[in-house]
Image (cartoon, rainbow over all chains, first blue to last red):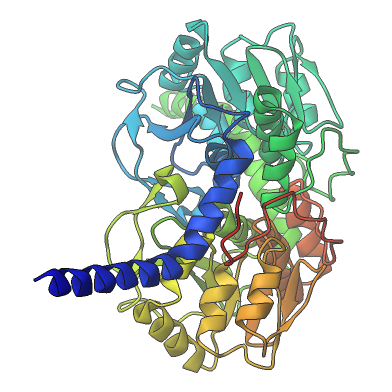
Length: 261
Length: 261
């Protein structure tokens, strides 16, 4: 009986060794991620981020920020939680209907958040949305919450500007539409040649990929430069705060005035 | 009777004028987009792009390429068609379950395509996928189709490499995993300090955001430098082919050997 037990013990022990070997790379990698962040970044609080999605929203506008928070979640042991929010529970197609998304919440039943991300869309879509009271009222409701910062990406700036909350504040937007934005909202101080503008309760970013910089900036402010650089390298993306805006290619600059092309 | 008709005519004409004025910015913008592309880029053919999505795939890996093709579609009057493909019809959560996607097709019922995009994921996820025969067989099946080029983003390179199709070919991957990749696949010629490598039937890209460069390169090759630059500017993103890879931050370099962190 004793010998049988010893044999079983040795057999089980060997199996364990084999299993450990097979999983060693996973264990190793997890340990690395752990050790990098354990001491300095114990999660004492979580940050919740809602991403507003709507039909024809530009995918890259919100996927850049989500990616930054996804990597930040890994490096901060779960500090960041991201979910998507739609006007209702229906599936949503991004621009050209290339991707179909299911929102996690609606604007009625979503929990309180630390950040609301508002992506942009092409101007015909934006021009329809700025006169949509549901959007305006939702943004005003979110703005009334003390702890919620609103982050617009690209032409998402129009949805924010439309509510009046940016009046007398600094903001930026995509450089193709910057002149139009300044004309539409003369009381907002348009900042050019930047990737984002932080105005406390509001952060506005310039075109599309600048959402990566705006959210790297947020994560850096909350977790330090080291974490920010790690995420930047994980994305193989060079963070930049300033950008000399190039000249808009012929005809790409947005204008409301009919022209004879 | 004559006067009534004249009054009705003037009334209708006025209504039309008002309607035209309200829509003028839309008409104008559409005309611009049209005029830019009409003559030179008449759609004589469409290019179909399938994006393989799976649980825990990295959102930015495939959303960058989708964004490039979405803008390319607008600038080429509908030349590019993108859809997502899953192993089955189930909803798929990207890394950390931050976004839930509904695939348009399954790998069984998808149409023939010109490009298959394979996004990456974190290494624990990738290590499970490379031993998944369903993935391997699907990629081999796609490779057997003459017209289909396969584009891997970031660690998606492992899924491609695993099938053997890259043997004796040049390829790249995320710089965090490059040394491991070279060790795992010694017969593949690993290229460093680049954003992508074109090997004819296969294009491999380095980390995450490099998927934007790889697909800008594809669109540029098919439609010329002008369209490529327009998309690059629309995304406020600086296309780059080369990149001096930085040193991996302490502990971020991937290794299968257990270490005592």
